[in-house]
Amino acid sequence: MSELFISGGIVIDPEIDGRIRADVWIRDGKIAAVGQMPVPENAQVIDAAGRFVCPGFIDPHGHIDGHEYTGELSLLQGITTTVGGNCGFSPLDIENFFENQKAFPIHQAEMIGMCALREAAGVTDPFRAADEEQADRMAQLCERALMGGACGVSLGPAYTPGSSILEMQTLCRVAKAHGKPVSIDTRMNSMTDLDSLQEAIDLAAHSGCRMIVSHFVYQYGVGVEDEAMAMVERARGMGIDIVFDSGMYKDWCSSIGAALFEPGIMRANGIELHHLRMITGEHIGVVPDEALYAHLREEHPHDAVVVNTGSQRAVYAIAKNPLCMISTDTGAYMPGEGHPQIAGSFPRFLREMARERAELSWEDAVAHITLWPAQVLGLDKKGRMRAGCDADLVIFDPETIADHADFPGLGMPNAANEGLDCVIVAGEIAAKNGCATGAMAGRPVRI
Ligand SMILES: [Zn+2]
Image (cartoon, rainbow, N blue to C red):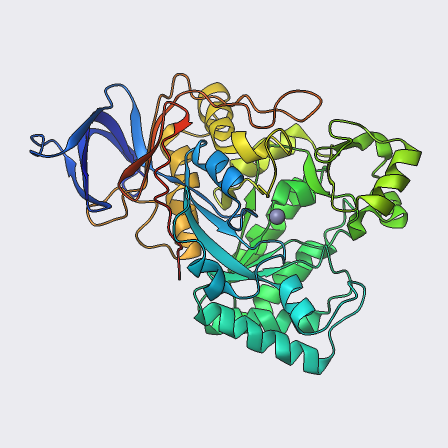
């Protein structure tokens, strides 16, 4: 296997909370040494003078699930490990999924999703709760997925409003028994309602599981973000293990056919048609009127839509909270389609939070997107700059790192980022100067 030598960069090691001028030697997919040293004989040298060298970014919340195009867009924003299967949607057979994902642009870990479990247990109506027998069946299938390497369980009551506390509690207990976290896409009762967050806190309190509240800004970023974060902090003060992930955009995304876009639920949430913009399908880029909305719900329920009801202030307030993991919520899109989060999230986080707004030091910003998610997810060999850890690394220019992706109709959702010199996955150069090399060094992350 090839050896790499990253020469003369500024290494940001999130475990020591500081930066050092050091070389990094990579051998057999692992970090062999960090420090000042002579160039090893057979190593390919990468000159990183003036650049930051840090662990590859970890995206704790996505929906790539083996989709290669968005896997590559993740790589091009510096993500070396993604967590799929979120919001309740995942493959049911995780072992089989991993078998089919041997070569991929980045590493994939996978949650087992509640919606997949409900379907397999015969609960087809999203507005109905699973009965006891069905909940038992869900628990068995969940157990099997966790034994097969799933990294946790994802709950999606936002998409299955009928799911009961009992069935979610059962899945939380299974996760706890396996020492794995649970993520939850909280219910959308109304945009400013915090009962849905209390439900997540209660689930964590009663099961003892580690709870990750998904895309916090999309759930609570409409003026209740401070109170929502205070609730999480109070819960932690009582010994409840709860954290959250959040993105860098205020506009959240779903499919137009989802229960969230039932007229009654829209009204309850103060969502109006002018808040919507289609980001896939034949009406891409369009803000729908009444007739188009009805047509899309009827004929194209899977077309994706963004809703711009959030606030930019909330994005920043949440992103700088030490409990926050930065996430993309990326999905399976075709070129030209989708939310800019699929391409720009992590460079945007570094540009806005570290360079332009200085809300976080560079060291804190890097820790936020490397060590912290690795700790939450139990990835012991990732997110760290130590010898023996996985050689998933990013080399970037702090002066120029920037995102350029925008919403369809306003710009390109897959516009290239700037300032990311090199992304290394499992010791191989997977992206260079903004272009994928085709290395396909990503592997399943079985936990
Ligand atoms: Zn999601």
